[in-house]
Length: 207
Image (cartoon, rainbow, N blue to C red):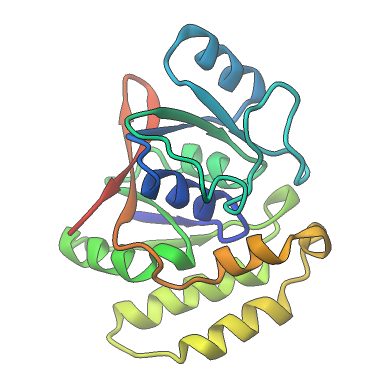
């Protein structure tokens, strides 16, 4: 079992989209593939980023705040990001895969426990060239602590993430996006990713 963690901002954005009614999110690694899938009618909207910026011809960027008030009832979205969705693709052979973030932390812990896996990989993603970032490392440590039955100080975790992250696009991260990403346990579902027809499909999984 694998939990691929991307706090700023891929899997926070995915969780917001699912909370706002999206039926599923197709996670891909390539911009052209995302656009081609939309063109084929598989999904209605493309969302994502490259170097923190919304790509040309994409409907939405990689911003939870941007879609916070947008309903996606019954829609399929297509998402690609510099690292988060690529991490999902790399983990596709795991028995079960979850897209992890602070906003779905406790629900992800419940989902992992229900899977009763002998081994669980908590994979902190990060920025360019697979260099892990502090917010993803801290989220992984928090998930590990909860899986071990501990009760970390959530406010302290928020402060650590907010003050320790050194990724290059943090300086341009909006206050709204930062707050959205730090809303620990905002959603009561885990983001489960399954391989369907050769594609990585994320849906909301409620205990």
